[in-house]
Amino acid sequence: MVNPQKVTSMLETLAGCLDHLRELAAVPRDKFLGDRRLLDSAKYNFVVTIECLLDIGNHVIASEGFRRPEDYRDIAQVLAESDIIAVELAEKFKLMVSFRNRLVHMYWKVDDELVREYLENNLGDINELASAFSQLV
Image (cartoon, rainbow, N blue to C red; front, side, top):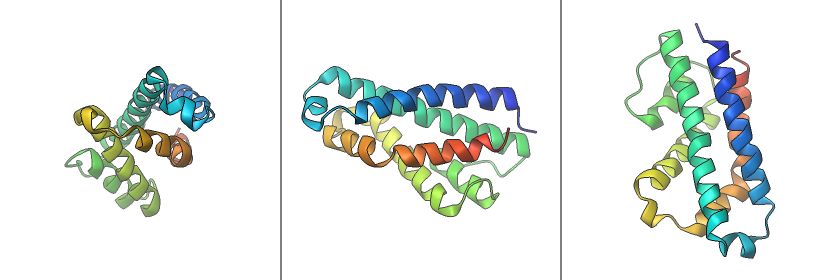
């Protein structure tokens, strides 16, 4: 059974990071791209946000006895197979995981423009996943 306290705690952390990412998205593009501290803040908050989503997903999978995921991207697949999230949302989740992997493991290859694009175009997807997970508590 899903532990509501654990999921709620992770969702609260995610919400704080998502609020900060929204603030960064409101910074004019040129100012954002020209300020290393803003870029670093966005990268860190994306990592924490996506980690929260992965942790919640893993918790749900383990708690409900679903198939064990093969890797982080497979967490999204297992959640879709188990009707926890829609297939379309799972595909977006997989892309988020790939972005997180780049930030964590290939940090020297992260294009700052890509970070800005994620700020402009993907915060709604994160919010949609968080909403889906909040329905479980």
